Length: 429
Image (cartoon, rainbow, N blue to C red):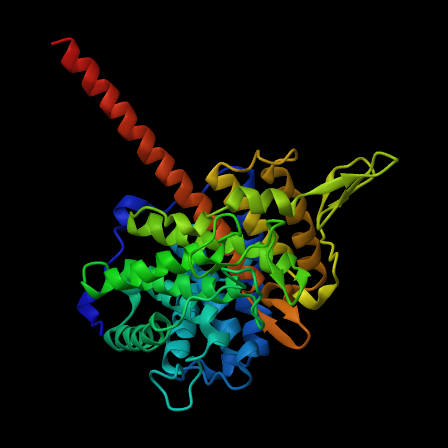
C-alpha cells in the first residue's frame, strides 16, 4: 500500500519548537517532566530495562497493558519533551542524550514486537488501536532519527493497521429510527478509528491513496458526535441530553471523548491542514451539558458530573450519576476536554471558564501523582480491563496542542500585520 517515500517529513522550520510560556503550559511542563523522571528512573529499573541495555530490542515480556502500552506512552512523552524543548535535565536527573537513547529504544522495541514485524506480536485488534496511533505519531515526530529498518517497520505497522481500519464500518449508538444498538459505545470505537485514519492521511498526503483515508476519517469523526437533531443518515451517537451514554449510563468517560479530538487538531497543525469539522462537531453543546448543574435550596451547586466546594468554586473529581458501569474516567481526560475548549474558543461558554476548570483539575492530578507515581500510566478502568490512554500521554497532547495553537496564532497575526503594512505602503506610493 504505502512505501517509505510516501511518508511526508514534518516541516519543523514552520513549527520551531521552543519552551512555551503561560500558566497552563508551565503547569503541564512541570508535571510532564515529573512523569519523565519516573519513567527514566524507577519505571525503567522496575521493568528490568537496565539489564537489557546492550540488546538491540527490549524483550517487552508480559501482558500488553503492562508492557507495550506503557512503553508506547512513555516513549511519546519523553520524545515530545525533548523535541519541543521543555525537557528539564535537573528535574529528570538525566542528560538529554540519555532521554533520546531511551525513547529511541522504546520506539524501536515496540515497532519490532508489532505483529506486522514479528510473529505473535501485539496489535491488529481494536483494543490496541490507541497505542498503535500513538506509536505511529511518535515515529513521525522523530522520523529523522529512525534508521532505515525502523522506518520500514513503521511503514509495515502503518499498512497493516491502516488496511484493517479503513475497512471498518462506521457505527452508531442509535439507528435513524431511534432504536439503540448494543455493545461498546460507538463514539469511542469511531474516534479511535478516525484518529488513526486521519494520522495516516496527513503522514502520506502526497500519495493518491491518502485521500481515501482522509475522506473516511472525516466521515468517522462526524459520526462520533452526531446527535439526534444533527444526525447522519444511518444514525446518531449523542443522546437527547447532549451526553454520550455507555452501557445505559450517562458516562463521563464516554462524554470526555469530545476531548480526544485534540489529536486531530495536533495532526492538522503539524501537517498545516485544516481541522476536520467533525472532530469538534456539537462540541459546545456537549461541553455545556457535561458542566450542567442545579442550585440547591442552600445555594450550593450540585453538578451532574462536576464537583464544587462550599463557595461554589470548581474542584477536581467526578460524579457518576448512574454508577460506574459506564467506566471510570481519568482526571487527565477531563483536563484534555477543558484545554480543547480553550483552544476552540469555547472556554467561556460555561459560567466558570475552561481555564479555571483546567487549573482545578491540575491540582488534583499533581496531588494524585505525588501519592502514586504509577498514576503516570493509569488508564480508564472498566472492571479489570483498561481503556483509553495513559495520563502521561493525555497531558502531553495538551502541551503540544497549546504550543501549536500559539504557533498558529502567531503565524496568523504576522500575516495580518504584513498584509496591513503592504496595503498601507501601496496606498501611499
